[in-house]
Length: 354
Image 1 (cartoon, rainbow, N blue to C red):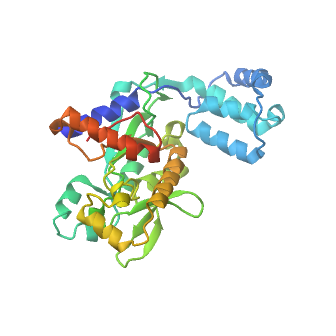
Image 2 (cartoon, rainbow, N blue to C red):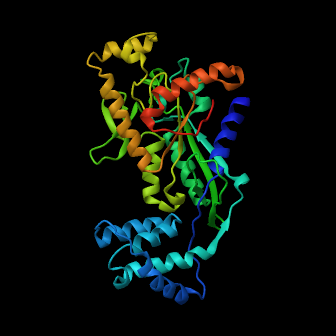
Image 3 (cartoon, rainbow, N blue to C red):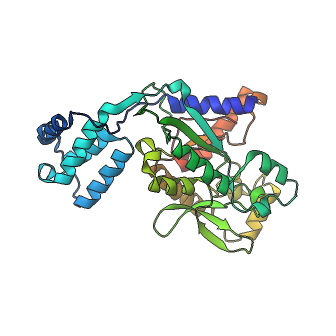
């Protein structure tokens, strides 16, 4: 119980103390006034902007609108040189202005945290009766269960509000009836011990540059698709953009001793020192392993994930039990995490201890 309480407290503290606000549509008698304001302010907001097609700009602004990010939508629209001549731009900007009036402040102390481990795709391999089956059954969720949970939460009005680790108290402004929540996933490292047990093996970029999972099925076929939480949630939010507040996704907490995101980035794979048996076997099975390229690939995926709204956190390098670990040991562990994990993910001030 102590372990879970520590995780919950750390996540809620970091995620709840957020800045910014957003707004959702209302229907009242102020529409004409808002439209006038949009026109009046237009000339003051024409900053230099990259040339974009009308459809592209409108699509971006529409998603911002759907995700309650009204100020940014208006800002984007007003940056366009043809703003005052484009009816679609003007209409959407007016809707955003009107929408600002409907939001209510949600109590930060009531924000819920929903937590997952790596998801199970093939239950027949995960629950095959071996020594790991019981633990999988206790702490992990299947892909099917996850999809049902997320759909139910969406139907009930839940909205993702994760934010970075900036520790300054702000406001979460959502439509009345919406329920902000924080989502996190621990151990996004795809450990060796999970090989062959029906889980994804790593996060990769597909041919379109989208973040997906590599998954090896029971016949040994290497597939790329939505086999774990990250791409599953990405795909869900594409279909339901209003499930995400300002484009937020989840917080991913990682250790470092087997690497991150499924990439073998622990320095031991490079030096060959202090290797565990499963790490030795990995190197034997991959004689062409290139540590430098492995790190480079991991960085690419991490960068793409951050661009999509995902955030990273430390689960301690060695998956430490904080309640049973001395402060000196935790400091040594944190130093290792910052040296070998943080540079791959990008610096993060948020830390979630396990």
